[in-house]
Length: 522
Ligand SMILES: Cc1ncc(C[n+]2csc(CCOP(=O)(O)OP(=O)(O)O)c2C)c(N)n1
Image (cartoon, rainbow, N blue to C red):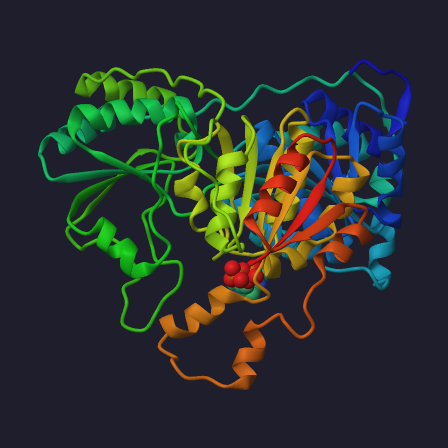
């Protein structure tokens, strides 16, 4: 950026973000952010996307970054605005997503008067951020934004920059802004890679546990080659930010969510080798069940941690074991083998039909909770797609993720496979999809229940329960009218109860522009 003369802090911040390639801002502003909004207005290169709730804003920034492989900015209104966005910031942190939050605050001299919106923003930000800084000098804002950008590219990388109103409106010199270098990935010590190769050679069951960028197609191909050569196995973590999958790519199973199945799956492993993954633990504690999913004798080794140079580590290990990766071959267009299911819709049928009809190069946001369990297996050999999940267990991210992914990849169809209860947390996402005319097909798996919680009652040992508990799990009095909800947000929608109608509508939605919602009654 080579603007000269004087400007203000907000414009310096905006220009620095643009200089560093951050050109999308998901926003929900208020009075204290008006100078930043003014700056955005004078910088049409910055795409501003309004979210009608901060959970939409932070979740969409997560979906954007997972697909764009670079951070978006968010704009949030003081402590309460940030607090509304925290649950999806938690998910983004677990996904190790890069993100730069700009949180406005009162002017510095106004803080002492404890005006109604004043709060301890730092304390709210810290648990869900890896980097928190309060800007104090308009002249230095370009530098501070560059620091936030660098911090966002560490792993995990939620950077939160607090912007007092007077720092935003304060005068600053419009000096050229220098682009900082991308942080270098850490080089894994070749000796530790050699010792992992030696460990594998000792025999016994070896499992590579994969997360993060290990789930991209090229890395999966290398890992498969290493496993083919050594007899090791590989599996993904249960919940992942993004998996590249579909025909021609290496399929990867996930550790089962259910604790007993997970323990059985990992039983007998002599060693688990972590590749951008964490040692596997139970999602929750259950009476008389273990917290760790692996046995006492199982060694946990790390090949590459998040932020390490994964390509180098895999290359070296392949060299050590004499493996050669076969590059992934992009899949052909899906031709459905076998007939589609017919008759009344079930959760399983929804999964099979979506898997069969999904267009090539789709992006799937899967927050289907209990309904979409068949989808992952059914779609393994289908059209090539990117698959995104809820990473931090805080429901209400599926619709925002889909929204952000569609902003990042305007030439791809996003399929949002969505449970009804979770959808209600951030339903406002539909309005952003309509406003931005995003190519998102939302499939609401309408089971009118928090079905998973009924199962969890049994899992924690409560077999008998009455009306008070049942009323916590059923969403049926009244039922949610998804067609009206979608239309009210500007998105066309249809309710279906048969496989045939569902398949027809799904196909139709894929060949039109803009968002569409199908309420699949199951
Ligand atoms: C922020 C947050 N609040 C509450 C929960 C607890 N919770 C887990 S799943 C669930 C309901 C899921 O229902 P739905 O999305 O309809 O999917 P289903 O179980 O019916 O398949 C709830 C409330 C949570 N995980 N995160």
